[in-house]
Image 1 (cartoon, rainbow, N blue to C red):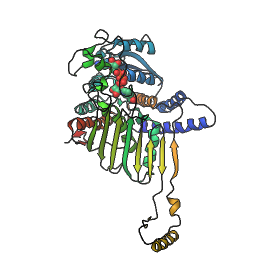
Image 2 (tube, protein in one colour):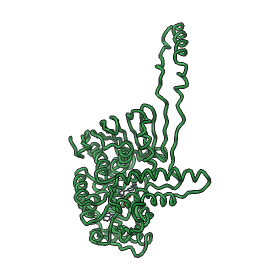
Image 3 (cartoon, rainbow, N blue to C red):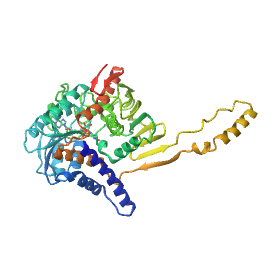
Image 4 (tube, rainbow, N blue to C red):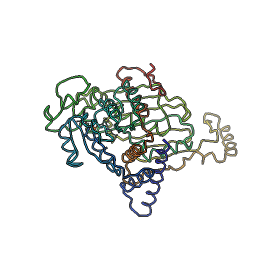
Length: 459
Ligand SMILES: NC(=O)c1ccc[n+]([C@@H]2O[C@H](COP(=O)([O-])OP(=O)(O)OC[C@H]3O[C@@H](n4cnc5c(N)ncnc54)[C@H](O)[C@@H]3O)[C@@H](O)[C@H]2O)c1
C-alpha cells in the first residue's frame, strides 16, 4: 500500500513537471509522461523482468487494456482467448502473429508461462474466470464491475486472500493524477464540511447507448455460443445478445454496474469511503426500446454514514442515455466552504463562509430600513466584498495523459513487488456492491440496506 501511494505522489509530481515543461515551450507527449512515471514507479524493481500476459475476452476494452499494458516496459502478450473468431484474428493483426489464440480460456490458465491475465469478457464471466485464474497461480486485472451479482463478491474476495495473488479491478480513475489531486484537495479540508456528492454520466448516441455493430459474419460457426453463455440461461444463438450483451440482465449489469461503478470507485478513492449503508434507485427505459431489458435512465441515492475519513454525506448518481444535449460526465463534491468538480480537470470554486449575518428587512418601515442599513455598514464594512466568489482554481493532467496506462503501471508494479494494489478485490466489491444493488433496488422497487464494512446485504 505504502509503495503504491508513494508512486501516486510521484505521478502527481510528474503531472506538475510535465505541465511546467509544456508551459516552457517544450512539448511533452503522453507517452513520455507515462514512461517517466513508470521509471519512477518501477525504481525499486527491475523493469527488465519480463511479465508474460494473456488476454481473455478480446473485445473493445480487452484490446484497449492490452495496448495500455504493453506500454509498460517488460510486458509481453503471449496468448488470447475469445469466443468470437473475428476478435482472435484481429488480436494477431494488432499485437503480432505469434500471439497464441484459442476459444477456450481454460487452455490459457493451464499454461505455466502466463504470469498475469486481463479479463475483458462480459460481466457474467468476471468472477468465475478471476477465481479460476488466481487458483491457477495467475495475477489478475479484471475489468469493472468486478462482479455481476452481489452474491459473487464474498467468494472473489476470499479467493484473493486464499491465493495471495494480485488482483486489480479496471476502474482506471483510481490511478489517475486528476483523482489524486482531487484527493489532496479533499484531505486539505478546503471544502469545509462535505455534505453531498453528485455525479453523472449522460450520453446521446447510439453507440453510447450500447447499440454496438454486429459483425456481418456473426453465426454459430464463428461464435462459440455455449462458451459465451456459460452459466447464463440457455437459449439459441442470438447475435444481438452476443454483441450487445450489456443490454440484457443475463450478461451485463445495466447502467449501474457499467457506469455507476466507475463513479463509486472514483469517489471512494477521493474521500477514502468504503460505501453507503442505504441504496435507492429509480428510472426507466425511456428511449432505447430496442428489446433491451435494462433501463436507459437511472438515478441512485445513497447514504454514507460518518467515518474517520469523511462526515455523513448523501450521494446522488445519474445516467441518462437520451440526454438531448451532448451528455457528459462529472462529479461535484459539495462542501460548506467550496465545491470541487472532477471531470476532464479538477476545479475548485469557493466563497469564504459569510462572516456578516446578512439581513431581510425589506418589509419593515422605510425609516427603520435606512437606520438598519447605516448601522449594518458601520458594523460589517466588508460585507459586500465577502459575498464575491473567489476565482476558480483548475488542475489539468499533461496533454495526452492516460490514467489507463498509469493503472497498468500500478498493476505491474505490484505484480513485480508483491505489494498490494489499492483497487483490490475488497475495493472492487465495495464499489460494485452498491452499483449492482442499485439494480436490485430498481427492479424490486425497494430500498436496499448494505453494510460496507462486512460487505453484506442487511435488508
Ligand atoms: N474500464 C473501462 O473504462 C471499461 C470500458 C469499457 C468496458 N469495460 C468493461 O470491459 C468488459 C468488456 O467490455 P467490452 O466493451 O470490451 O465488450 P465487448 O463485447 O467488446 O468484448 C467482450 C469480449 O469477450 C468475449 N467473450 C465473451 N465470453 C467469453 C468467454 N467465455 N471467454 C472468452 N471471451 C469471451 C466476446 O466475444 C467479446 O469479444 C466489460 O466488463 C466492461 O464493463 C471497462
